[in-house]
Image 1 (tube, one colour):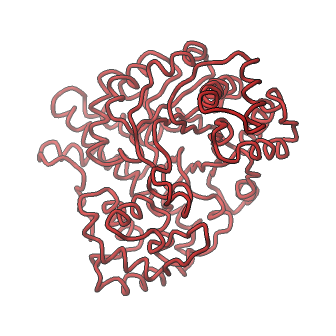
Image 2 (tube, helix red, strand yellow):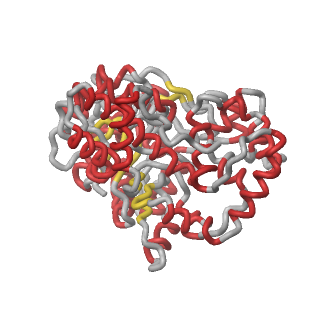
Image 3 (tube, one colour):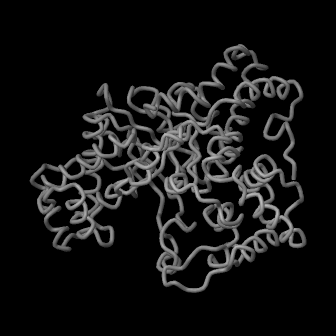
Amino acid sequence: MRPHPDRLLPADPATRDVARSIAASTAALPIVSPHGHVDAAILADDAPFSDPASLLVTPDHYITRLLHAAGVPLDRSGVVPSDGGDVAGPREVWRTLCSHWELFRGTPSRYWLESELADVFDVEPTLRADTADAVFDALTELLSTPDFRPRALFARFGIEVLATTDDPCSELTAHARLAADAAFSGRVLPTFRPDGYLDPSTPGWPDRIRRLGVVSTVDTSSYAGYLEALHRRRAAFAVAGGTATDHGPADAGTEPLADSAAARIFAAALRGDVDSAAATAFRRHMLGEMARMSCDDGLVMQLHPSVLRGHHSPTERRFGADTGHDIPVAAEFTRALRPLLGRYGTHPNFRLVLFTTDEGTYSREIAPLAGFYPSVYVGAPWWFLDTPDAMRRFREAITDTAGFYRTAGFVDDTRAFASIPARHDAARRVDAGYLARLVVEHRLAEDEAHDVACELAYDLPKRAFRL
């Protein structure tokens, strides 16, 4: 399982030699992770990880969803049912992974996990049914030692900045504990994720808005109070170190409403009396309001629309959201964002990072938008596209139009803490290969390629996300 030193580099020997040199120049750079889903409490508590399954398998829905597709129920992967039903124990979860290891051949999940096992844990046996228990026991023993506690791994991974994703009503207690702890030198920053507060069709929306009022100490029974409450929570996130918001709406629509119309829909939604058309209109209007607030407070706006959440309703009812069955749909940015960018696209304090799971939009829409609007940056391939081949296609799709400096660097977008260095290393290697091809084709000088590689890995995410 020891990864090859030339993994992901070009097959052509001349190009590979250049790519090796470029990749080496980025290998020791700190990790900047501006978009992810690791729980800050893991680092605040610094409790030992209990077992390899709960660290490497259960939180990684790249793994659990493919096992599910092969007939493995989610509870056998350690995903806890919301009804409190039985769930497989850690050793059984690990055995399930090892006995299905062939499913991951050729996938980025296998690449990441092999990198983790070899580079982080120094585990070499190939995963299979007859090695499962021995590997599980070896990993469990390592996880009980001080060198493999969360903060020790954070330092070992070379993480300089780690952004989390947080509910607007979160009290950010874990972030406060980390910020006040002189023994912890890293930066763990909250990210404001308000989707459930902007879309009145979300189940439980009236209760959520009332809770928003309590946390922000604002009366949210009026539209004006609701806006003020969101403004205050954004400010609280900024005080806690946050530099960004994160939005995953059903589409990228941003058509504004008159304040009177928005207020009418808001009042109806609080009564539980809003139809789908009105809810959609309000959600699109509020995306524009988030942009307006970003112009005021400087929080970088991340937008990743057009994913159908909870595609399998029975699974969502039993296991909840983010359990592997969110499925991409076709995206549209150009017309959808025109109202927002018409108002704020050239505002000096506005910054918008666009992500997509629809590859066709990179060259057709996102790169052209980023190639004109000073506020727009192209987000990295993520989720279904954070694969080596898709990352190469990404560079080929956008570089002609947007270059390198209208991109926002790599994001790992992971809940699986131990996979962070493997994911960033993969992105750096893919970029090294792409840049090496430009060098051997005499389209870029080699010293420039080294500079660009380092900027893509480190400088650009810090700059784009105001870190």
